[in-house]
Length: 629
Image (cartoon, rainbow, N blue to C red):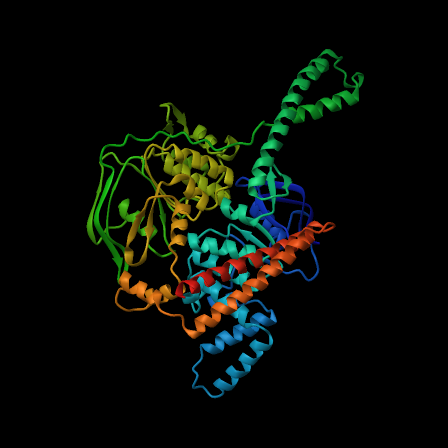
């Protein structure tokens, strides 16, 4: 069933045609990833499909009764209203009821009529089956870390906070179609994994743009690629897309080579014929023009080139000894000691607000530590790529920004090239080099920001969320460059694929400013963490504000007999698991029936995912309780 359909749509931006006469549709049950290079019009297309923006030509139709939720890169709010008012701005009866209940809880219970009103609200919540929904809302608000912001006006918040608030709003509304533009930006790794799970299990129809390849691969069942203003569709996830795109490019390149050979013959024929056009065979002249159009295409898409020189690195790079930093009572770094070595490729992970960016500023001298020593080697040249967009000269042209740093840039092979040639390597062709900074897309600005860092030939690279707003093609080239980078590298990123491919150990930011050095990449860290995941009872004991529990005491607690409540839960879960397994087998039998169309199969597949997730959850709890027996 088609939910959204766009026909012959076109869009221009800053006198440039992003796409022309595109036909794009979204069917129920499709989870679509939209892919294309920066500046190809991905965000513009999402806005049009979400009816947030209008196409220059063409039309958009949305199936009657279909609700569409949109998370953009720059969310729009009522700036004077609070976070709470914005999050609960939707008018669905269920959401309005939960909003009223949540608000009443904040009032003074000694107010006249408080208890009668609360009793009435609780009855209405029960009748509407709203308790599960209310729990889901609480989980979303808690996971996205916006509970403490409830009474703040939105105009006072940072870009990252605004993005999380917009995400909470769209997830709470539970629309029929979920459209997401770079949803993982500004989230820590644990929250990205949680978001991936909720999108996969709660939403049937999804359209998204993301640079996170694990997120893309795990959620999508279809890929739409925008390439040179054309749309290409692939019925599969991101891994399938990569395979099929290679095949498409091989076919296209073969067609171009064939057209070039044919064009040489036809060009010779054209030249040998009389000059008067009317005396030549018109069909053959027209065919020649078509052949010429194919032959003059580029064999491959333009690609970023990274070949900068690395400044020679001495024996001493950087040493941190007993470094301590705090803001008031909030400890950021506690007695951290580490000696950086050549070839170190370190990933930094931790929750938002843990102090990752502060730590980087301590190393680079942007902040002063409270205690301890930071000793930087004489030959160490930092290249620091920050989350913030540092290119604020909106009235300057691209070429001017680069020339302000250097007229000529030394490459890895010792060759010196002009600023214009260097820009061309960064996918800014001569025609674009005199653009004003204000006309660049978010991804193009990030690419320019990366250029400004690398132009100084650093030997100690620090990249704070480098993957935000970069397209996947650019990320692949950046990864290859960093893989062979001869200096020292520190990366802060929520992109799990990026981290897995590049880092050889992690700095894990834990509570009270403690930093753990973990020998491995992110996936290895997560696997170890899951292997050591404590039981619910252990987590409750650890979270209590009492003296530290010694291992022997913890074992004694686990060895105690089960309570009556736990025993009852244990028996109940066993029965629930039996029922779930029966449901799973019945569903498998249905899926194996012939005659099902793809929409029915997608529905059954979504139902299967929910059952399997429920079985995993119940089994894990059953095992926890079994340990207590």
